[in-house]
Image (tube, rainbow, N blue to C red; front, side):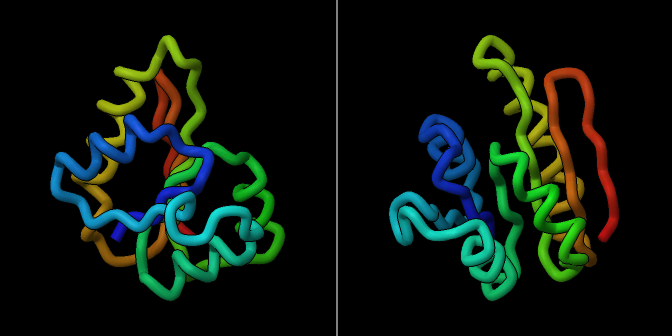
Length: 115
């Protein structure tokens, strides 16, 4: 399952849905909850959390969270098409793979850290 943080653009959610990923939207189901609560949902659903909020990096690493995967999207709106291509590439490779990761995706780079 892919958990989509409430700051992620609806166009991205629609694209993932069109690729037949199982989606859980924080915006639709639990708007306004804390980042910690979002992490707990991702852990309970054993899913990948997709966010644009840099605070999740600090949360995951400072609290040594290892049982949740996070994909942090960092891009300018003009780079949207390249970012979606990179995101789909990452999901194809890591979505069903065992283990947990913190993955940062930019227009030109994909950084992967195993948790």
